[in-house]
Amino acid sequence: MTCWSDLRRELDLWARQGETPTLWWRDDDAVEPSAALDRALALAGAFAAPLALAVIPAQNRLTEADLAGPVTPVQHGYAHRNHAGPDARKCELGPERRADHVIAELMTGRDALEKAFGGMFRPVLVPPWNRLGAHLPPMLPELGYAGLSRFGARDRPAIGAMRMVNAHVDIVDWKGGRGFIGAEPALAQVIGHLRSRREGAADPAEATGLLTHHRVHDAACWTFLEKLFAVTAEKGIAEWRSVASLFYA
Ligand SMILES: [Zn+2]
Image 1 (cartoon, rainbow, N blue to C red):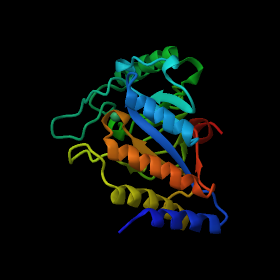
Image 2 (tube, rainbow, N blue to C red):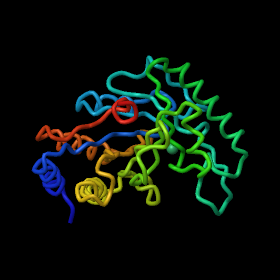
Image 3 (cartoon, rainbow, N blue to C red):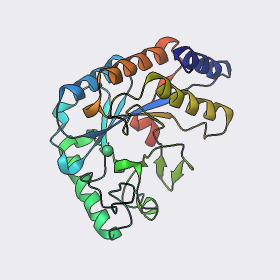
């Protein structure tokens, strides 16, 4: 059974190798001010864990004034609308529509977020449902995207000047009532990716990405997050990375 002491042990193994276990935090589906969003922002501030906030442009009512602390808004697709067929996995940015239409939407969305958040915004694309047509990523650097973030161990660190850093840990049980997935499976994901990096099975340089969805969190999700930040802070060896350091440094 995976437990918190397993995470402490994994962090120790990194320290023993003289390596820094790097992590990052991405929260998806932000659209408006809420107590849940404030709670996420407060956690980011309290634990110095910078938050990459993936905002849905076509639904967004947030502005720069709603965000405080170490947070960077990034782009979560355009409208979070599924265009895939009824039997296909959900996808907004897939091959079903002409690429120029998809790109025009993305540009409209990015402009809207630049207006809403001013200099806070960074052009990092987080595709809804973590997927997009295979034809799109090679086009994104020329369109001005500095980063692309999906889910799962990355197959390469960059396309041209665009960095790719994914999330690897999803704490919501989407198929089972959208509550917390449970500490054991959540920790298994964290430790699994850290171990894969340490052993070289995954890219050691890809920071382990925590994916959350503040709008659907139950109490157990928040409790887990608080403990995860506390445990990773205990020995001062783990480093929670910002959008700037992941996609721009
Ligand atoms: Zn989403």
